[in-house]
Image (cartoon, rainbow, N blue to C red; front, side, top):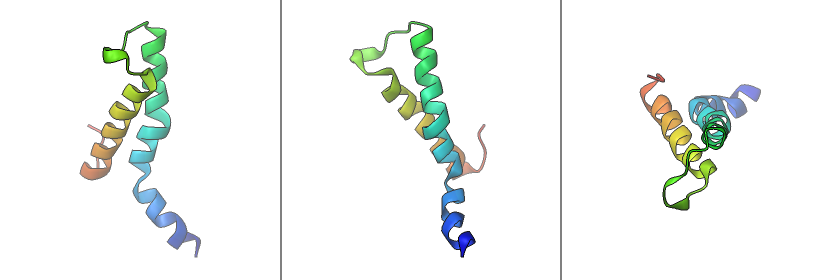
Length: 65
């Protein structure tokens, strides 16, 4: 029963890792380095795009690099 519930969740773990861990890490790194965001976009939005894209790529290809 638990495997049926958690199975689909674990299939998307690279994407969730990109959104949940990499995105805030990228946003905090941009803020710590005082890097201005283009067009006034919040740093978290940039982190979500980069982290989510990287996680989606890892989910699709099966590898991070």
